[in-house]
Image (tube, rainbow, N blue to C red):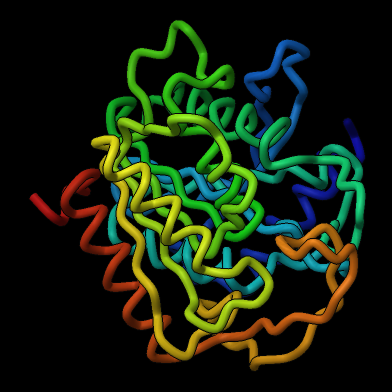
Length: 292
């Protein structure tokens, strides 16, 4: 546990070294919602003011929350600051670091899975936020990227074993960036009660969009409030603030082959459109004080 505290402290130092006075990150620890109450952690970014604030739980992708050198990755840094500026208290959940793992993108047999451990983490994060006096317990949204978006889709399934039986307020909305939908689309009679947006890249060859488009259409036909948006010319990771498109060696992807090279990188047009889509969904289903 001292190792976890050290990692989180280092993240705070890294964050605050780049931050303004209003962008202070708080290192936190909390229990996953699994039977073992696995202790995990993350970073909280608060907006200015006394609160209580609406909340957002963020689930990182297969690369993890931090780089090999321990720096917070640029994508969660951008989104947490963007959300906090709009009045949301953000919890960047770290599913890998506290369990002793870094990036698992090139690992075939992944030790932390989006359909097993990570949905429990999502609900552990929700319960943690709901226990804070500065968060509105009835107004917390869920966001995920790639592997984290896959975990999001499993977590919001109705019914789901990950959801605590005594939960008074579920997530108000869910936003998933480029999840892999091949496995979850085979789930019989998938439905969700949570308004959900899937944001997909047309050219994504890591987690292809077509299975997600079919999945969303089928779930919507069962009266699930789920909608998928396809961004033209965009690859995986299209919302990254700085990354140029490059090839990545991956294992355990949506492909039947165990190892292959795929594309990943930002797309300015798709990124701007996705930011607008997130803004619109949150205003509609999980508004902050700025929207009222």
